[in-house]
Length: 188
Image (cartoon, rainbow, N blue to C red; front, side, top):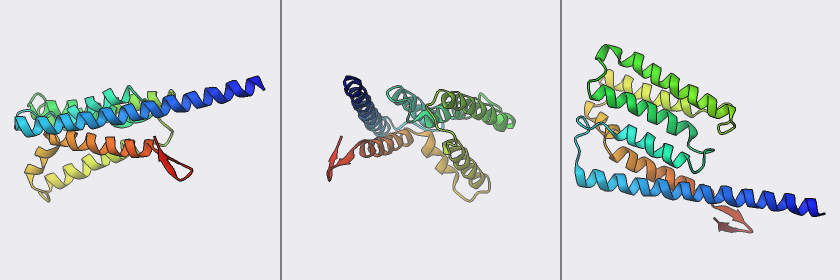
């Protein structure tokens, strides 16, 4: 009977710690969102001179990832490495004829890191997020090159508005999913 109580206490404390980490991560994402939106509103940075939106989103997701490595593992690595590549492209550090090659190299590094995270159990097998992220970027690039969307839409992901809105959406989503229904009431 004593062993059963210890096992129950261990499960309860693990759940409580997990729920606490979820809430901390949600609050950090919300704070990052508010800070990025305030900076975007106050600084009015030119996104083509300071193309930091995707990179800031990736770094912020990596910081939030540290509090709960079971969430944001894929998004944080993909967006950080793609953000580094986007930053170098728009700063003209990478020549135009090498953009595809560097994008593929940074995506491959991100996929390698995600595979390592999967081996450690932080990412489940069959995660769809890498495919979705790369697919969205590919569709955006295709539409841009085909001139089906205006070129000035590139400014949004490069600006601080992108991570601000992204962090707020992720933070709210994770905050709402951290709550759970018990006896008809929502608890956190």
